[in-house]
Amino acid sequence: HVTLKESGPALVKPTQTLTLTCSISGFSLTTNQMRVSWIRQPPGKALEWLARIDWDDDKFYSTSLKTRLTISKDTSRNQVVLTMTNMDPVDTATYYCARHNDSSGPFDYWGQGTLVTVSS
Amino acid sequence: QSVLTQPPSVSGAPGQRVTISCTGSSSNIGAGYDVHWYQLLPGTAPKLLIYVNRIRPSGVPDRFSGSKSGTSASLTITALLAEDEADYYCQSYDSRLPGHVVFGGGTKLTVL
Image (cartoon, rainbow over all chains, first blue to last red):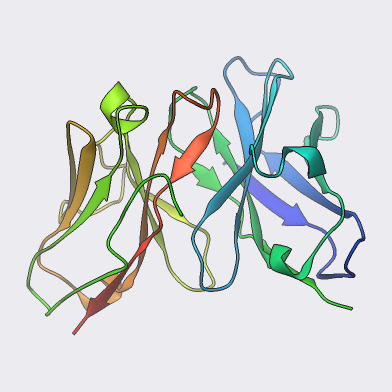
């Protein structure tokens, strides 16, 4: 049974660094072709892809946010971590992690999402 | 501005049929990348509705169907139910951005 679950702070202050953890079960990021992405949705706005990490540790980032994002994985703990620096109120959003297992395939499993509010 | 263009909203009465379009370009849908569709209901995780243009995952009713042609794709919902009221997003990939996912701007379906 595949599950993903996001965790992290619900509230961060402007300029702080956000660290989110995606805990996975039912699959392994050591499996060939397995990938996990982070995606966010600001209130009332569209889904926005942020970053991806692959089974072979390849990493990809949104062009517009590349300088602020770092994605990593800890396969022993079955976790994928996303850090975003210099948080701003416009970064207020629900953050999701999702699995895909093909380079152009769909996100077949998603976490429930975690709402992060950026406010002083 | 999303890379894939969807109408902001569509509506239909129960029992009717609606179609949601997803327009891309020669660097994404037109380049041969598959299109996937998701349903977002408030407070729930996004649900994969259609993948690889027209395939329904197990458990998705056959009232939902997808197609792709040229630089566009579409999601059709027949026999509308009140429970279909949700936001729908298309998703693909873009050859200008290796490894980068692109989403549509989302379409709010209202069941009248």
